[in-house]
Image: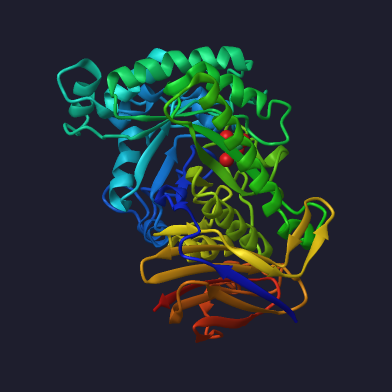
Length: 496
Ligand code: AHR
């Protein structure tokens, strides 16, 4: 048994946790939209063709903002194809995922879904094969009051009241050679600047997300971001970060030490935004929008990303186990620890495609990562506290030294949310949580995610990895519990 103390103080605050870090992502990719959220043929379909079973499961995740329509898809998408009467929408050849796109789901359907689930919409415009003017027109279609061409078109399509889309991504992964319309940083920066200027001229209230480099392993990392942010200046409200991780060498010790690398990615991009702010003497810096993140390494490349011209092919349908769920918790805890810089984050994606949910005809499966996300998202409100950890650790081959405890803490008035992963793969951890200036009076609720490291949910056995009530805490001013090895515990304490 390892022993660890987590010491907090209610005044050692990092910043308010942005509710927008509990976002998601829906792309026209594989069965994410079609056979995912939208399936008029399903016995679960509502009057709008949306799957009510999927909607109810997504509601449990308490998502706040959802990005759409891609992803790589966005760079070949022309939004006018996806509006108006369905019978006159074109079916098109989709190049990013080599699929058939019927366009029966588009902007208005996405907004309707957002309204059902109380999500804030986030739209990624096409800066690959599209023009800045097309992006400008999309903002007018969504956000302008009636009286001009595109706003009147929206009204004619059934929505006289503007959709009021607050967040707009200026393209997607434009530094990647795989991206349709990929260009060097200088050229992207010009496109993005032209688009952002016109988009904000249409609606001054929108916030823009500039494409950052698409992964820390890219040769473009940081230099692209600096270049683009310097060119955009105050026209970029956020810069995007993307990260997909995995355990290809089957080393849980390495995998669970990933937090070091996620922290570094965030801190490096944040340093870049601070540099640009000072150099350009901007009143505020661009904040971080981690608009794609997840575990994704098994269902990659080849047959997983080539739809061979089909409609709703099975693409990148990753299956998740317990260790993946621990890593999802590790991502979220890192975002919380960086509450002063990470203001938006989107789990990529939501249904079927690298998703917490999987559909099989009319059945629905909640994967392990569903529970990790829900456990944190249910405790999102408050101020992130800086914690001091006193305990042993280990040195992982890929990511260096870590403590056995990975954690985050959020104070919400008389409630303290504490998130803890015991990374020890064999030993339990006796964890003591203390708040130096306040007493922990008791436990409001506590949940644990624990199973074999490789255990996963299947349609036959859907509840192998699921959040269960955790009754292990003893509170007496402090709180003490024994956490099993490789487990995630999320707790809300009552404070005196
Ligand atoms: O989420 C799947 C893909 O990953 C997205 O389309 C792209 O932006 C990223 O490379």
